[in-house]
Amino acid sequence: MAELVADFVLHRLTEWGVHRIYGYPGDGINGFLGALDRADDDPEFIQSRHEEMAAFMACGHAKFTGEVGVCMATSGPGAIHLLNGLYDAKLDHVPVVALVGQQKRTSLGAAYQQEVDLQVLFKDVSEFVQVCMEPAQARHLVDRAVRIALDRKGVSTLIFPNDVQEEKAVESPPRVHGSVYSSVGYVRPRVLPQEGQLDHAAEILNAGEKVAILIGQGAAGAADEVVETAERLGAGVAKALLGRASLPDDLPFVTGPIGLLGSKPSFEMMENCDTLLMVGTGFPYAEFLPKEGQARCVEINLDGRLIGARYPADVMLVGDAKETLRELIPRLERKEDRSWRNTIESDVEEWWRVLEDRAMIDADPMNPQRVMYELSKRLPADAIVTADSGSSTNWWARQLKFGKDNLTSLSGTLATMGPATPYAVAAKFCFPDRPVIAIVGDGSFQMNGMNELITVKRYRDRWQRNPTLIFCIFNNQDLNQVTWEQRVLAGDPKFPGTQWIPDFPYHQYAELAGFKGIYCDDGDQMGAAWEEALAADRPVVLNCKVDPEVPPLPPHITTMQAKKMARAMIKGDPERVGVMEKSLLGKLQEFKESLPGRK
Ligand SMILES: Cc1ncc(C[n+]2csc(CCOP(=O)(O)OP(=O)(O)O)c2C)c(N)n1
Ligand SMILES: [Mg+2]
Image (cartoon, rainbow, N blue to C red; front, side, top):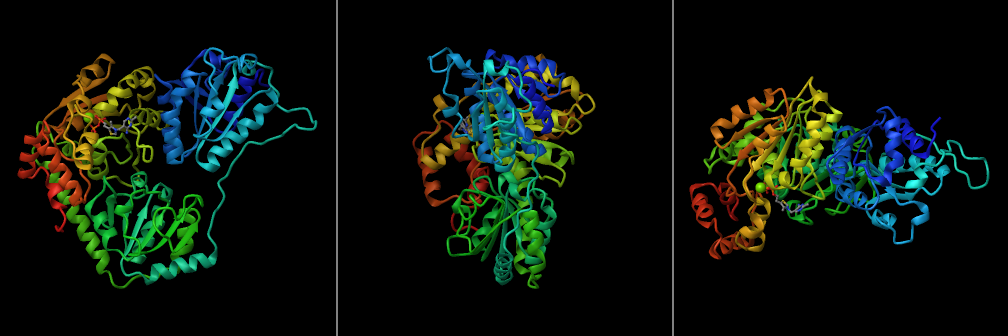
C-alpha cells in the first residue's frame, strides 16, 4: 500500500512498465524525491545536468525502446527547462510523460515565488495536461496520461502541487457520485484500411511503370514487407531521416536519404517516377517529391490526421504499415519489366562510389565526410547511433551505411540542436550491452553535450560489460550548417561574429572526466582513431578537427541558390578564397555534379 500520493504515482507507473525516470530535483517535487528514495530504485531516478536533457533522454528512451519515456522536473524554472525536449517528442511523435511540480494549492494565484501557469505553458506541447488537485485523482490521471501518450504518440504532462504529493494516497476512491475507477494497460490496435481502398491502391501501384517508395519512421518493423513490396513493384526505396533505421542501407535498391540531406539516387527517383508509395512518413519538402500531377500516389499512415498532407494522394490508407502492406502485397503483381529498377540499382551503386570519392578528397585539416566514411566501414552491427542538428547530420545521413540491427535517430522534425548526447546516454541506459555512438557538432557539444558528460561520469560503472560509448565531435569551430544556409539560401557571406565558435580541447576535457580522449586531424588516421575508440574500456570523446569549407549542400542545387552562393562570395566571405579555390579543385564536387543541366 502506497502511503502518499507521490508513492502511489511512482508505483502506478511501475505497473505501466515504467522503471526509469530521467529528471532533475527541486523543492517543487520534494514529495516525489522522498518517494523515489522509498521506491528502492523502482522506478530508478537518472539525474541529468539540465531538465531539457532529461526530456531529450525520455524522448530518446521512447524512440529506441518503443516504451513510454518519463521525465520529471520541479515547478517554475525546472518545468520551463523541459519544454524543448518535450517539443522534440511531440514533433517526432514519440510517447513521453512529464511529471512536474507546482507550488502548494494554497499559494496558487498569489503571484507566489516560482509560480508559473503550467497548464497554459504545457498546453501546446501536450496531448493531455492536468493538475492533480486531489489525491483520488492521481490514479486516473496517471492511467490516462500514459495511455494517451502511447495512443497519440505524444506528450502527456501531469502537474502536482507540492502539498498534494505529500497527501495520503487514495488507491481506490469511495464509490460515490463523481468517483472514477481507471485501469492500467494499452495494446496498440490492429488498424487496417477498407478492402476497397486496398484494391484501389493495388490498381494504381500495378498500373505504374516507375514506382518510387518513400518510407519514414512509421515503417519501422515493416522492413520485410517493404522489401517484398519493392520487389514486386520493381521499385526503389528512399528513406526520410527518421526512417533511416526502418530499412538497411545495404540493399541494392535503397536509394538512401532524401531531401536537403539526401542522396542523388533518391532525388533522381522522385524526379522521374510515375507512381509514389509513401509509408509512414511526414517528410516535409515538396521540392524533393514528384511535381504535382507527375505521379499517382498511394499513402499509408497510421495517423489519419497526418495523411494526405504532403503530396496529393489518390488513395489514403489509414493503417499500420506492416499490417497494411501485408494486405496489399497479395494484390500486387510482379512487374516483369525491371528496367526502372535496374536503373535505380545502378544509380545506387554509383552513388556509393561517389560518396567514397567525396570522402577521400583532401581537406584542411580533415574532410568531415571521411570521419563518417571510416566509421561506416567499422560500424558494429548492433550499434546505436545518435545524430544532432548541424552539418555533421549530412554526413551521418549520407555516408553511414546502417545494417538491419542498427538503431539510429535524431531530432527529425524540430531539428533542434542538442539531442545527440542525451539520446546516446538514454540509449546506453536502455541497452547497456550495445555500443552507442553520438555524432555531435562542436556547437551542440558546447551548448549542452559537454555538461552531460558529467552525467556519463556518474553512471558509467554500470556499463562495464560493454563500455563502448563514443562522442564523436565535429570540431570545425563554426556553426557550419547555418553558415552554409546563409551562403546558399540568403546569399550572405559568413559573418564570424555569429558563426565562429571557440576551439576547445574536447579530448582533454574527456580525460579530466576520466574518459578516453582521442584527437584526430588527419583523414588517413581516422580509421585507426575509430578502432581505438571502439576498443576502449571506457567512454570516449573523439575530437575530430574538420574543415568547415566542405559544403553540406543538397543533392540538387537550384540556379537561384547557386547565384546566391556566388553573391555571398563576391560580398566578401572571409573564407571565399578557400571555398572557391577548393570548389575549383573539386571540393565542391557535390555542388558541381548537380548544377542544373548536369545529370
Ligand atoms: C536549439 C537550436 N538553436 C539553433 C539552431 C539553428 N542551427 C541549426 S544547425 C546549427 C549549427 C550547429 O553547429 P554545430 O553543432 O557546430 O554543427 P556544424 O553545423 O558546425 O557541423 C544551428 C545554429 C537549432 N537548430 N537549434
Ligand atoms: Mg560546428
